[in-house]
Every structure is written in C-alpha cells, then in structure tokens.
Length: 252
Image (tube, rainbow, N blue to C red; front, side, top):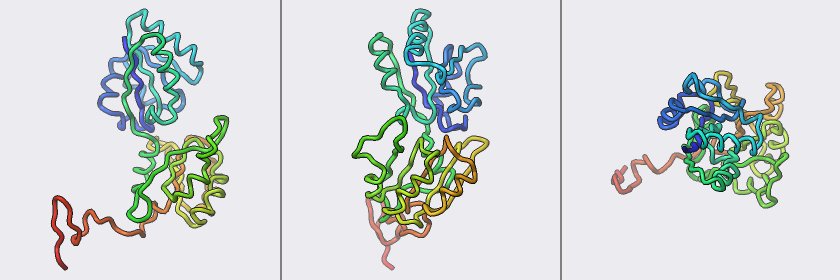
C-alpha cells in the first residue's frame, strides 16, 4: 500500500503529468482538495473509485482513511491543487504517514503561477530587470514571518507571484506602489486554465478597482513586476554579437 501526493495542476485536466494521469486511472481511493481541484480532473478516476473531499475533513479524519486503506491493502491518491510543494499542507500528512510506517511518493504538478504566466504569454524573468521570482502570500489567518513581510520582499524588485491574497488586491497594490512605482505592470488571473478563467491587466494604480469591479475575491494569482512589460532589453542568448559555448559572435 502506498500514498501518492499528486499535483492536480491549476485546473485544465490536460495539464496533468502523464504519471499523474496513469496513477489516477487506476486509483481505488482518492482524497481530493475540494473546490480547488477542477471536477474534470476527477473524471480520470475509475467509476468505482472511492472519493473523499478533504475540504470537509480534519487531519485526524484523513489519517484514519490512510489507516483503513492500509488494512485493505489499497493505494491512496492525495490529490492537491497546483503543485503539492507550494502551500499544500502536505508536511503534517507525511508526518502522520511516517508515524504509521506507511510509504508515500510525490508527483509534481503545474503550479497556478506557471499557468498564470502561460495565460499572460509572458516571461517572469527579464534581462537587466528581474532575474528573481518570489512566490509568496499575504498574512491572513496564517501569519507571515516578520522578515518575509511583503514590503520587505518588494525591495528586491523581483517579480512577485502572490498566492492566496485575491481578497486583498487593493491593499497589496497600495503596499507595492512605493517600491515598484504606481505604474508598475500587474496582472490578476482568476482560475488560471479553468473554463471560467478571467484575466485583468493594469498597473498598481488601477488594479484594485479592476478587481473590485470584477468581483474577484479568491482563487486568483497576482503577478507584479516590471518583467511583465514588453519594452525591456533583449537577452544576450540570441544576440548575434554574443559568443557562448555553441555559437561564435558575428561581427557587424
């Protein structure tokens, strides 16, 4: 018996990995992350697979399911949205599995920040502008460590991908306007890759009003940074005058 922590991806079932799809196709028991997982992903399960919505369960209840599955010698898929390693709350489940002596494996998935970038048809890095991407969130019922405060992170001028903060877009924009400038590009992608996907593009000066008008309060990725701009220096990678291991520079 084994437990598989599988990344369901951002929503589009075609963004599942081949390994995830193979495991889902033969899954006898699936514990899935409620409204965060597109129901279309669950269509890959066998018709007779047992299904449990973890949104309705505590850690103790999930652990009981693991124990019962071991007694029946049946594998379990623990299906998380996006990639399980980002805000997946998998550590405490693994601690319980370690305590019980049950084996487990992680199958990565496409994260919502990657799906948002794909939707925006953009790079999150840019030569001479931003060579760093920060994945973060704002404080809520889960507090943030003091040295990871959003304003402190923003001083790096990195590209910020902000999770779990759609209800605070106006506040986020206000905080970031000082270090990035009010005209810094920002995008909000609601339900990236889902059929009801919605994209807002603007600046830190106007994105809060846009989000309020659109009624976006959850399940949206906020992307902030000058890397979103198109008017930035080109990379050296394809510069004819730039030599590297595989190509010699051409004289002009």
